[in-house]
Image (tube, rainbow, N blue to C red; front, side, top):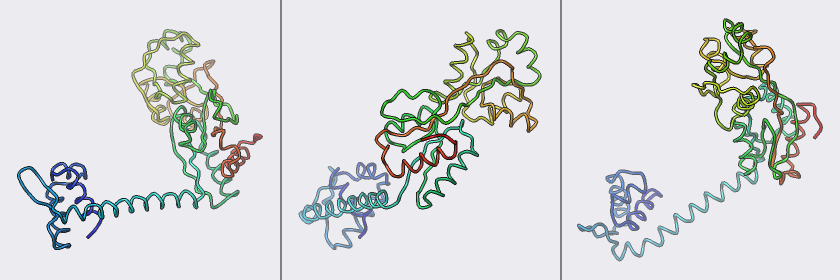
Length: 295
């Protein structure tokens, strides 16, 4: 007798029908039937009476039901206890990162964390800037990186750097962008960034600042793909300057439009409640060491 058989028995007892029980267990009806027959064979007793209305417990089935339910409940409690052991005795932290953070800096950060405590299990989750802020606020993440102004008092911030965004176009369109920028910007397809991303905020600020009503036919959250689309003369967009210079150095067919750039503050954020938490303090120290700022 195994747990799958017990689950099938309890489900059939609860629903009184094989079909409904099978659906609740995400199994086929023949599979549930086989489980019931196996447990009855193992116990050498009939647990159900079969009729046209469905399945009804026999006296033996009624006596066995609370025992089966108790065993399943104990197993659920054991699973919860096992998870609590994992979270209690394994030091871990969940960190939200965004595309705008330099990957070399992130590598240095991880190395610094391990230098300070090699036993700390660091779970890194890639996400959009707004989602990182929301998850940190809800304590679904222990900390993360965020671009822009933090509006929450329950979330603390450490300013790390400014990220420069530049406007990039295909090389053959640069002269047109410089000579008649307003017409060019309003008639050329822009790559829009996903909602809640840092790039989305930057683009909206840029359009508002320059009083533009651009065409946006593309949405893309991958910077490398954005560069390829621009290089193919399919669209224009704003990207972090380091990514633009990296692409130009690699020979990509893109150019920077002079005089059009945006800046946004990069911050490390964490829940205010974690101010005195040992692991939170350790990661904050590693972040400050990596970026060369004061805690």
